[in-house]
Structures are given as structure tokens and as C-alpha cells.
Image (cartoon, rainbow, N blue to C red; front, side):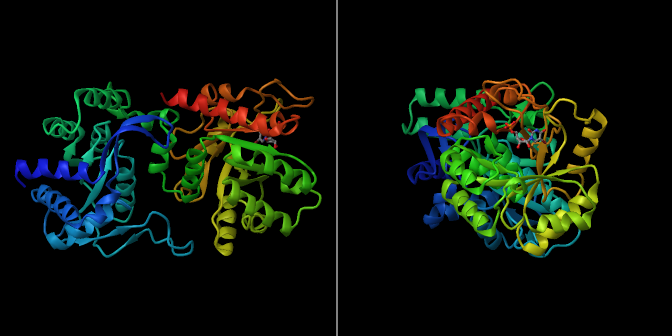
Length: 474
Ligand code: 5BU
């Protein structure tokens, strides 16, 4: 395509609202002066056709007749489809979530072992989604060395992908978009400066050693970037709830009567991302209570967490889990029995046809616990083990035990006023839990539920924990 054609395409994209300037609140809470929304191009067939053509032209030199295409879901799917038809190249389709639990087929289409597959993406920031797609394709025996991307936000994604052995061909680096729009008087120099400052301040690579910051310090990444990276559907759901509600708060409701539990859920539900229960201490626990909780979780948009801390052989754990995975989204287990326990949970979920996310207890908050460094390390090794990605959401811990961006850390022992209870519990504040202990979510129980006004308290804890998270990723 001629230079003029390329410029025309930038102008067209701006014209249909695929490139926007202003004040945009990203899911992470950060304000961005620029926003790319390529989802709109499906309503503009001529522009979609031009986009596919220009991307196809750019891969001519690296493709062979055998090359396959794979669009990163969802926005790049129509682009990849049109490129596939125009270029007579086969395509494979990556699912975002397994079709059903039993078959777990994540890639559709046919390919041969070692066949080259070019990834097609609309926008890259950190490159996380491309990387995740490449990983999946590689696991399915395809070779991935190239990604063609329409818009590169120039926030380090290219370097991150090069580090992963993927060469990035970008049609429009953001600098080129800015140049074109200034030239055609669509934006002024103040807008350009604001965008450049945002890009400079929000790099996702560590320039000193070229290693992705995200890979070294997941706690410095936004939840949005982590949600884009992670393949586990339960983790993704949890991160999405957190982003929607700007809440990294989990409330622990440790009450013995269902009426007390439900009353508290109604009061604090809107402020929290997760409601944690010990259903085995609720005297009148029943399927009606489960149903009411499930419907409240939908209405008030939070996930349900059973803190049962299972620790037995696989067969027993399977039976125990089967009564939990019908209603809970998250479940704690101990690592002590080893991988058989996780397989037990997995088997129960498969039978029930409902996936639950597991959190392994890697450290405890209470004084006198018998956890030690070696055990914690072994538990983390278990959770990060091969084949566990679909099941394990993260760890319950008092420090940053895992360096995986896809693993979430939940930290209990959080209270705004007290440093301990009358027993063995030890507390830190929500801010300390996030900034010093590395918590992604803080778990607070009596600090909220024993207060005379749990509703206001929950909101206070939410705000403090979320502010600390925003400070951390700055
Ligand atoms: P509290 O009221 O904020 O102290 O409640 C803390 C909750 O977290 C409670 O349900 C405990 O069972 C749970 N917990 C914890 O306090 N410490 C730990 O290390 C683990 C769980 Br694991």
C-alpha cells in the first residue's frame, strides 16, 4: 500500500472512532489520553478489507505457502479471517476459554507438527495476549516466530515479544499515528505531548536489562495486564470483577447463622470482589442458602470463596469438593498431601461440569504456625506445576511467594484498628498488606463484620486497599 494509502487508513480509523483522544479511564484505573478500539471496524467492511490487505502485504516476506494464521481473540479474529481468505493461508482459531470442561480443546483447525503460525493482533501494549497465544500454539506443536500487529502502543510490547522469540511487524507504531494526525490537523501538539508522556511513563519493559518488568515483578503490573496474560478462566473472571468494581477486597464472613451471613453479604457485597465463607461453621447451611448466596453474587457482582483448606488424599478431596464446587468459585486447599489432592479437586469439577479456582495455603497469618520456608517453596512449586494452570488461581500468603504474573496472592490477617485478636491472629493494615506484603487481594473479616457499620467500613477497606494497589503499579 502506498504511503498515501497508509495515511488514509489512519484517518479512516480516527474517523470511525477506532482511535480516540481525550481522557479514558482504563480498567486498571489509570487515565489514558489515547484509546484504541478496533472492535468497531467490523461495521466498516471497506476499512476492514484495507486493514487485512495491508497486514497481509507486510507478512509477504516472512510467510511461506505453509504458514498458518491465528488471530488473538476476539478483535483480531475477523482481520485474520479476511487475511486467510485473501492470502489463501490456512487459519487456526484459539479459544479464549475451553469449550467445555471435558474436552478442553483450546485450538480449532488442523495443522502439522512444527508448522509455522503467524499471530495476528489488533493492538499491543505489553504484548501479553500475543505471548499467551504463542505459548498455547507452541504447546500445540506449532512454530511461532512472527506476529503482525496493526497498532503498537510502543509501551514495550515489541521488546517483550522479541525476548520471547517473536518478531513483531507493526503497521502503525503510535508515533506514526500521531505524526499523521498532526499533519492532517486532527490533533494538536498538546495532545501529542500528553500521549508521549503517558507512553514514556507506562513502559512495560525494564530498559536496563531488556527483561520484561512484568515477568520480574508481577506486583508492579496492572490487574488489566495480568488479566490479558492469564489463561485460567476463573482468574480472569476474578480480575475482571476486581477491575469492574475497583475492589481488591475479600470479606471474610465468619458467622454461624445463615441469616447473619446473608444480612452482611447484602450490606458489604457491593464493595467487595470476593465473599469468603467457612460454610461448615454455618449451623443452618442448606441448598436454599447456597442459592440465595449465588443469586446475591450475581446481583452484587462478587465471587464466592469457600475457605475449607482441604488436606487429604485425592479420593476424599474429590468427595469433599463435589459438595462445594456447585456453589463456590474459589476454594482453599493445603499443599501437604501433594498433587493427588489437586487431581481430586479437578475430578470433582469435571463431574460437576463447573470449574472452581484453587488457592493453595503457602503461608499463614497466625502466631505459632508451623509453616517454614522450605514448605512454602514446595507448595508454590506444586501450584506452579505443569498442568495446574487451569485450576490454580494463586496462593494465600503473607509475602510475595510467587513471581508468576498469573498467580494471585490473597493475604488474610488484615485490620485497620487492631494488631492482633484475643487469640493467635496477627493483623496488618490493608495498605501494608498490599505495599509491603505484596497482596493482590486483602482478606478482612472482623475488622469489617464486627463493626457497628459494616457497610461504611467495607467501603473504607476497599478504598484503602485499592489506593495502595494504584500506588504500587505507578
Ligand atoms: P479476621 O476476622 O480478619 O481475623 O478473619 C480472617 C479470616 O481469614 C478467617 O476466616 C480465617 O479463617 C482466614 N485465615 C486467616 O486469618 N489466616 C490465614 O493464614 C488463613 C486464613 Br490461610
